[in-house]
Amino acid sequence: MNTRTFILVTVMLAIAGIVAIVSYLPTRRAAANEYQVANFPKAIGEWEGKDLSIDDRTYEILETRNLFIRDYKNKNGDNLYLYIVYSQDNRKVSHPPEICMTGGGLNILDKKTIDLPGGIKAVQLLMEKGSYQQLVIYFFKAGNNYTPEYITQQMKVVVDRLTGKRTAGALIRLSIDIKDGDQEKAFQLLKGFAVELEPLLRKYLP
Image (tube, rainbow, N blue to C red):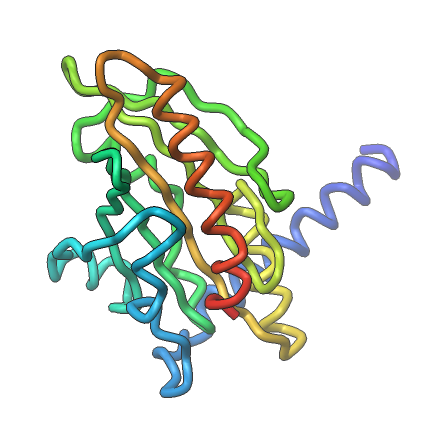
């Protein structure tokens, strides 16, 4: 093993060790002063949101009740869905959405990274089940940073915890049903909503 390989392996083992140690540290339940995402605005630009029900199993898996799924509609009758799960000090609350979605019977037809307003990079998924298609966009928030990568968010949360800094994390997911095979219209609706959403994320998710 040459010197460069040895150093690389050592660094990787050190990172893995840190993650393993922090994983075994007890995660604190939501503090009393933690922002509750249920207070997130239901009126976003021309869109009005309505909360959808969430089953107890979902709460148990995520180890938090600090989340919501909303159906947002505009005056033209278009609708899309916004899902946010948030915790100030429990990094387990967020995970890649495709895990649950494929478990629910949806298939991934396409996956890529895209740019959204506000300098956000996000993952875009084209999902299908039979004749039904859905377009999904998601990204993670770690402190003041956005990232499309789950591992990047988790590493930042781990480092923040080790250095005593704020470790707030969130998963933000947008989705829309594709009607009449018009994927471009679906994307433009999600992108337009994201323009209105981004400033609110910075304001309401500390």
